Image (cartoon, rainbow, N blue to C red; front, side, top):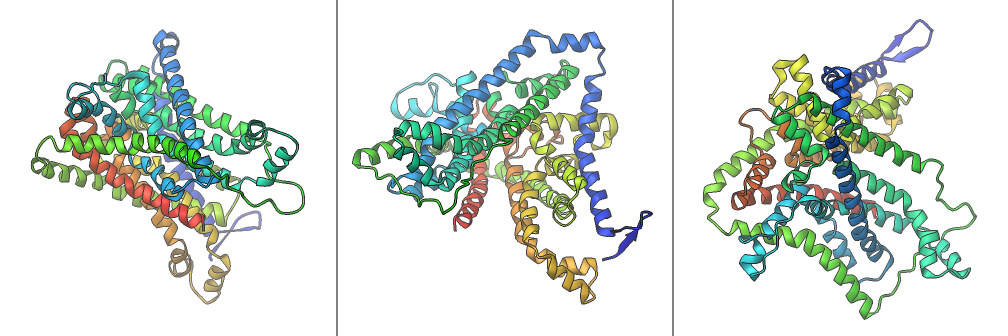
Length: 530
């Protein structure tokens, strides 16, 4: 590969310089809009800023967001922990089927789950029309907590199931041999070893809930993200919207920081000699099997059966033919941004991955961390930052497809980066060196040797970004061009207007395409499990 001489006498590969420059440009694209968000926030004088920050409403929003996040974490843990234990540590009949069923709720986004709960209740709801039983319309904290818990618990379940499978059974056996009761074994041995999985799952769920817009808006719950949108869209006080977005970002970064601090210095691997004991599944009797499937069945019915039943009910309330044409048009509009966003995210992720794997350094580490900024920052705050950037620094970009595609690619860059970087670790440098020794240049070597090896990772990353972009809501709401009505926006708008029958086909289409993501997760899970 061509080398470039520098004054110190050392020679730095030209590819490394190129990838570093591209990586820094990508990192700059992540940070530049946040600078404009700060700029917009500080357009007010100091006394105004203090008045905004110390409003009683701001404190109430902070409490509401904390209550929602805490509630979802508790409910998701209550659901996921017993399910992971049943699948991983017992002989529950049909546990492989159960493993699939409890991951399927990932195909039902939070705002679609909120739609299902709303469509269940009321005088014209599913329960009253089918069973003659009327439930009050779910709203507020309970409604938002239930909708988000039923959607997010599989993230925690997947982490806990892997942790249970990797736990050394000899540790628990030793504790029992020393006279510990079953409760003491769980609290003193099992639970501490599950903490990394719990923290990882809580981090993913917490960040999602903090930034959620769809479910909280449909449930009329005043959390930060919902009020940010109201403040901005109604043009009441955009400086206040900017400050709320900055507070939301600070909350998210604080959650990430605390999670990393809690993991510092923790060691969970065995240190003694010898191998760990083989896993012995707890044998459940007839009563245990019935109780296990009773709990699991209730979760599956609530998280999968409920949305399917409600959607089926509302879709059969009227003819489908009139909605097919607008549904197809909405689907095409979703495709028009999801496909290029996936491709752009892969193009951006490739140099970052190459830099991290082939040229590790403090600079490559920094660039890799910057690549995760878009995913760590709540979606609505990230979108609002780009609104202010386009209005103040690039007005020609405002409300264009190009801006929406770019923001999608940056927001979901981390999803594409993970599989591509993993694939790069499996690409053997010796093969690339052999190709160069045979006279192939850098481009030819990449096309003939490296690319075929990492192509599955690139495809996997593109699939992840594509499916997420197909169902994404808050970014599209703030950045959508005039007349742009993808599946998520159309479904959300009609639900918030009480048009549940009209929203049902769009919700069903979102679930169908989200199922691609679930299928990808399950396929990867089977491969990882051997």
